[in-house]
Length: 118
Image (tube, rainbow, N blue to C red):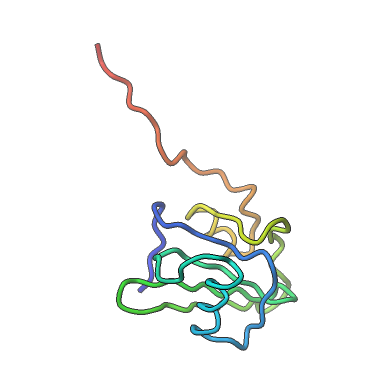
Protein backbone atom coordinates (compact mmCIF):
# COMPACT_ATOMS: atom_id res chain seq x y z
CA UNK A 1 0.00 0.00 0.00
CA UNK A 2 1.24 3.46 -0.82
CA UNK A 3 1.19 6.04 1.95
CA UNK A 4 1.64 9.75 1.38
CA UNK A 5 3.50 11.36 4.28
CA UNK A 6 4.14 15.06 4.97
CA UNK A 7 7.87 14.49 4.41
CA UNK A 8 7.43 13.23 0.82
CA UNK A 9 8.27 15.47 -2.10
CA UNK A 10 5.27 15.74 -4.42
CA UNK A 11 5.89 17.08 -7.93
CA UNK A 12 3.02 17.95 -10.24
CA UNK A 13 3.81 17.93 -13.96
CA UNK A 14 2.15 21.03 -15.40
CA UNK A 15 1.69 19.82 -18.97
CA UNK A 16 -0.74 17.15 -20.13
CA UNK A 17 0.71 13.74 -20.99
CA UNK A 18 -0.25 10.73 -23.06
CA UNK A 19 -1.84 8.28 -20.65
CA UNK A 20 -1.13 5.28 -22.85
CA UNK A 21 2.38 5.16 -21.42
CA UNK A 22 2.92 3.04 -18.33
CA UNK A 23 5.58 3.02 -15.64
CA UNK A 24 8.56 3.04 -18.00
CA UNK A 25 7.13 5.83 -20.15
CA UNK A 26 6.33 8.02 -17.14
CA UNK A 27 9.75 7.36 -15.60
CA UNK A 28 11.30 8.48 -18.90
CA UNK A 29 9.18 11.66 -18.79
CA UNK A 30 10.44 12.32 -15.25
CA UNK A 31 14.04 12.16 -16.44
CA UNK A 32 13.75 13.92 -19.78
CA UNK A 33 11.08 16.58 -19.38
CA UNK A 34 10.85 17.15 -15.62
CA UNK A 35 14.62 16.81 -15.01
CA UNK A 36 13.93 14.67 -11.91
CA UNK A 37 15.07 11.22 -10.81
CA UNK A 38 12.13 8.79 -10.75
CA UNK A 39 14.04 6.63 -8.21
CA UNK A 40 14.23 9.51 -5.69
CA UNK A 41 11.12 8.47 -3.78
CA UNK A 42 9.23 11.59 -4.84
CA UNK A 43 5.61 11.29 -5.96
CA UNK A 44 5.09 12.48 -9.54
CA UNK A 45 1.57 13.54 -10.53
CA UNK A 46 0.44 13.68 -14.18
CA UNK A 47 -2.84 14.52 -15.91
CA UNK A 48 -4.30 13.83 -19.32
CA UNK A 49 -5.20 16.53 -21.84
CA UNK A 50 -8.88 16.73 -20.82
CA UNK A 51 -8.00 16.69 -17.07
CA UNK A 52 -10.41 13.84 -16.41
CA UNK A 53 -7.71 11.55 -14.99
CA UNK A 54 -4.61 11.67 -12.81
CA UNK A 55 -1.69 9.26 -12.58
CA UNK A 56 0.74 9.14 -9.65
CA UNK A 57 4.15 7.48 -9.96
CA UNK A 58 6.53 6.80 -7.08
CA UNK A 59 9.38 4.44 -6.22
CA UNK A 60 9.37 2.77 -2.78
CA UNK A 61 12.83 1.19 -2.77
CA UNK A 62 11.66 -2.14 -4.20
CA UNK A 63 9.67 -1.08 -7.21
CA UNK A 64 7.37 1.50 -8.75
CA UNK A 65 3.80 2.26 -7.77
CA UNK A 66 1.51 3.59 -10.50
CA UNK A 67 -1.89 4.82 -9.38
CA UNK A 68 -4.57 6.00 -11.79
CA UNK A 69 -7.75 7.89 -10.92
CA UNK A 70 -10.34 8.72 -13.58
CA UNK A 71 -13.36 10.80 -12.67
CA UNK A 72 -16.69 9.28 -13.64
CA UNK A 73 -17.99 12.74 -14.53
CA UNK A 74 -16.49 16.21 -14.70
CA UNK A 75 -12.88 17.34 -14.64
CA UNK A 76 -10.24 18.17 -12.10
CA UNK A 77 -10.83 21.87 -11.48
CA UNK A 78 -7.32 22.73 -10.36
CA UNK A 79 -4.18 22.28 -12.37
CA UNK A 80 -1.08 24.51 -12.29
CA UNK A 81 -0.36 26.46 -15.46
CA UNK A 82 3.12 27.93 -15.04
CA UNK A 83 6.50 26.24 -15.35
CA UNK A 84 7.31 22.58 -15.93
CA UNK A 85 6.57 21.32 -12.42
CA UNK A 86 5.14 22.60 -9.18
CA UNK A 87 5.14 21.08 -5.71
CA UNK A 88 2.29 20.18 -3.40
CA UNK A 89 2.14 19.25 0.26
CA UNK A 90 0.60 15.93 1.30
CA UNK A 91 -2.71 17.43 2.45
CA UNK A 92 -2.97 19.40 -0.80
CA UNK A 93 -2.53 16.19 -2.81
CA UNK A 94 -5.41 14.61 -0.89
CA UNK A 95 -7.63 17.57 -1.81
CA UNK A 96 -6.55 17.35 -5.46
CA UNK A 97 -7.32 13.62 -5.61
CA UNK A 98 -10.83 14.34 -4.30
CA UNK A 99 -11.38 16.82 -7.15
CA UNK A 100 -10.88 19.94 -5.04
CA UNK A 101 -8.62 22.97 -5.29
CA UNK A 102 -5.43 22.53 -3.22
CA UNK A 103 -4.89 26.30 -3.13
CA UNK A 104 -7.90 26.55 -0.83
CA UNK A 105 -6.71 23.76 1.51
CA UNK A 106 -5.70 24.92 4.94
CA UNK A 107 -3.23 22.77 6.82
CA UNK A 108 -1.05 23.18 9.85
CA UNK A 109 2.41 24.57 9.18
CA UNK A 110 4.99 21.85 8.50
CA UNK A 111 7.18 23.10 11.35
CA UNK A 112 6.44 25.13 14.44
CA UNK A 113 8.99 26.23 17.05
CA UNK A 114 8.32 25.13 20.61
CA UNK A 115 8.01 27.75 23.33
CA UNK A 116 10.75 27.34 25.93
CA UNK A 117 9.52 27.49 29.50
CA UNK A 118 11.54 29.86 31.67
